[in-house]
Length: 268
Image (cartoon, rainbow, N blue to C red; front, side, top):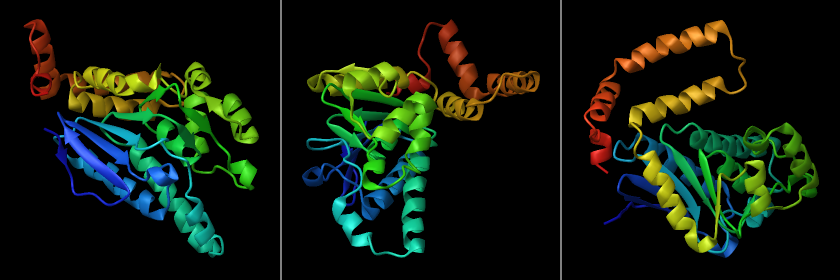
């Protein structure tokens, strides 16, 4: 049985078999985000990351789309705000995306329908993106006279500066097949097969040691953009020695040699 947490109106969280699933639950506005959604998602990401029973996190949207970007009602409501208020909103959005990006647990974005603006960033901030054939991605900020300040860093990291230039400057829509080709999506399946594809990916993820996955995520963040140097490899050797002596590594190796499963796999 899945456990359903007491959640705010904009999202719903379920936990089953060690997987926390966050559903954005505003289908009437295609899960567009506002200040309330941003705060609720930020808190949900942090709470699931602290929950030792949660091994992985899935982000998904109910209704016809994953996330249609900023809620137009919020945009209208805040149009006359002060510069300081706009800065607070920008910082809150950046904090939400960074919290998701820096989770110690592996994360999967389940994408169907439109992912626009911040929706693209939510996808790109996840470790793995599984997209249905209905998925589309677009950065439309320039068409509104805006700049994708918080969105661009995650998109650039996902597809590189050269491709990001095109899509950020044109605001054009990226269809699912193209998103898969350029690496914005890791897996592409028919919409009706989305849940199965996500579950298959989760099956791979839960075989990894929780500490090893958290350390690997941190390692990849630390290595991003850095050249391979002697000092970097020397540090890698020292870090390897520390992990090799850990209880999780010892259990993993002993289980492998005995042709069995370690506790983190048996408990799923």
